[in-house]
Amino acid sequence: MRHRSLIILTTVLTTGALTLTACGSRDDSGKNDGSGSKTTVVIGVDAPLTGSLSALGQGIKNSVDLAAKTANKNNEVPGIEFKIEALDDQAVPASGKANAAKLVGNKDVIGAVGPLNSGVAQSMQGDFDKAGLVQVSPANTNPALSQGDNWGKGDFKRPFATYFRTCATDVVQGKFAAQYLYNDAKKKKVYVVDDKQTYGAGLAAIFSAEFERLGGKVVGTDHVTVKETDFSSTADKVKGSGADSVYFGGQYPEGGLLSDQIKKTGAKIPTMGGDGIYDPAFISASGEANETDLATSIGYPVEALPTAKKFIADYAAAKYSDPYAAYGGYSYDAGWAIIQAVKAVVAANDGKLPEDARAKVVEAMAKVSFDGVTGKVAFDEFGDTTNKQLTVYEVQKGAWKDVKSATFED
Image 1: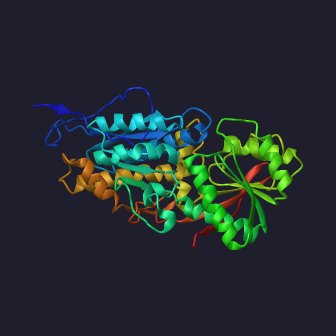
Image 2: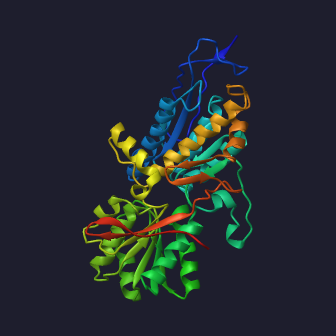
Image 3: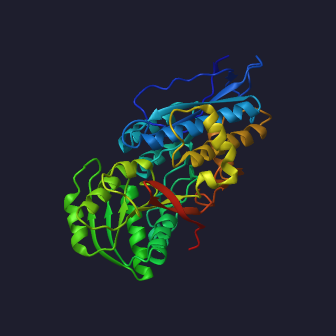
């Protein structure tokens, strides 16, 4: 009789080969081999583990690893031993596409978590869906990933039944940012810049529409290119526009430099962005003081959540070399959602993983509901999180300080 090890991946991109391990084995009927050992289920993690966004990627990887170790310690799924396989996508869509094909091609992979970037997710979704392989992202915020390309016209259509996420979308984040900048910060004339990427351009468009709906004015727009460092021409345009604020749709490497170069023109106005700039590296990228710069981020500050105390303590005890960063709590919850889906599937099949485990895990994911690190974890009809909490942060004395948290109401 032919035996095989069982492996589950969470989503990670790399050019290297996968190494599959098991502390138990099962035959093709899904039965354990009778040795008394456990079946190893590998949760893959797809994130930029190197490069300019590695600060976020390492936090994602470590947090999923902690979820797997916690499940093992608690014997969360009897007969199952969880491990992770972390792969590096470097935030490149082409790598995402190639790695999605690798994961799908491995018949032992039945689940995936990630990636960080919405543009990378777009390159992976189709392959996962064709294979019936569940995907849970802790960080993708582009609405089209779950609601279709025509969501902005009110035509909501879920493109992939296999796609889920534990973070709120940019529909929520962009509007929340515009409302804070206009109503709370009292800014009326904003200059909007984006990095031409899926996440940045989409977020900037949502922000702009809401800011103008509220009565504000977008006095100018421009675009920058990822990995470039000279944004002086854009900074000069901002200075000449008379704007009292800047909104940047993009990530912290470019956002920090843009803020720095705008302030060097003499335009002492705040730069605001989304969760892509909410990182200490945004502040350190600027030679000028970032005081009053703003960022929104999904959820409430993890440190302020009673539900996150154990996660924070366990993460510290694990002595990871990198912090959990902006998406740590959502990554833990994404990994735990996979674990809970597997638990439901195993329980419904007399303690064994069935042959159609991929399909069963997708079905189970839609029904997952638990109290997680970031609050209640559950998914709506589009696979989006039902948790729509957000926070605005301001740079104060060289560090991000939360200034307003709220549950978004459209």
